[in-house]
Length: 319
Ligand code: NAD
Ligand code: UDP
Image (cartoon, rainbow, N blue to C red; front, top):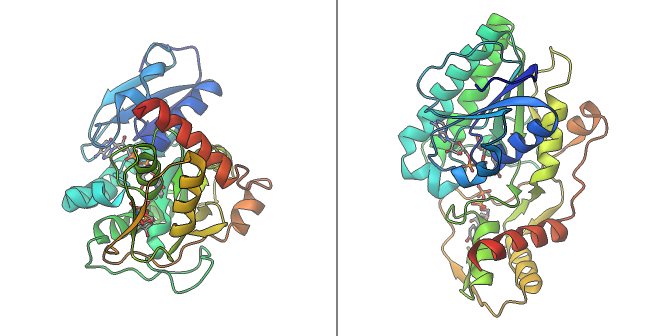
């Protein structure tokens, strides 16, 4: 880490990624000194370029599946893991290794520093849920041997590790289950629905709906997630979560496609492609726990407004 006057030191593993880079921005604003650890597997230096000259910000190119040692750390955020289906399926074994061994190494670091660790888990731990909306006490409906299992089971195991580090060593863990999040700095090539639809609409290509488009998701703008993360690490030590962080407004993928076409005034056509294996049919968080634990937190950015900001980002990026 660079020499800094800031006394609060945060580690953000996965800090060069989409969500991680927004978190680094927020921590710098709140006068933390930030160490971003990332091996750029799916992240980009471009996301943190504007921070590199800041004396309170350091970057280390490191793979979290290898152990690490740092002192005087005040808080750790573990976001290091490929997150979109095409990226986490590219090398499924490495995804499991990152989710499990990476989390283990960061838990060891939290234990050595006696500091809290926030684990970025996912709504994917619910799999293709049979109950709606999903509450934290629902155990999920996950295929343990499918093409999404490396991510879903990897993240489930990382949650289990967090709880065992809490029970066995008293580590202050905070497990958050993040639901679909979007916004500027999403990778253009990661195949997620929001980035796909926007880049397709802006470049006049066909908009690819997988299946009939009646499947639902609920989309959260990245700023709302970052606000929740900052509040979660301040909750009392013995609160471990898991806690759902997402936007409960559920929409179909077809409606999202129509919204993107309308906002971009695109002439793109909507076409159908096959639905990927084990693609969840419905997903929506129950956020009552988050609202009560996080001083009334709830998502504030309306979907159209957030999609508009994301369109502006991609328009500037891809022209
Ligand atoms: P992202 O791919 O943009 O960011 C992940 C970051 O982790 C990248 O910068 C990548 O280079 C880094 N990384 C991956 N493997 C690594 C390794 N072995 N060592 C060091 N760095 C590594 O994805 P994101 O959308 O920003 O997601 C961040 C976290 O949030 C992930 O853990 C993801 O599972 C979780 N999450 C995201 C969403 C979402 O909708 N974006 C939803 C649920 C959970
Ligand atoms: N999807 C789609 N077209 C695309 C990309 C995704 O219809 O070009 C669908 C996908 O099948 C899923 C939903 O949109 O039903 C959300 O996909 P994403 O990969 O963004 O997130 P996840 O499936 O992990 O929730």
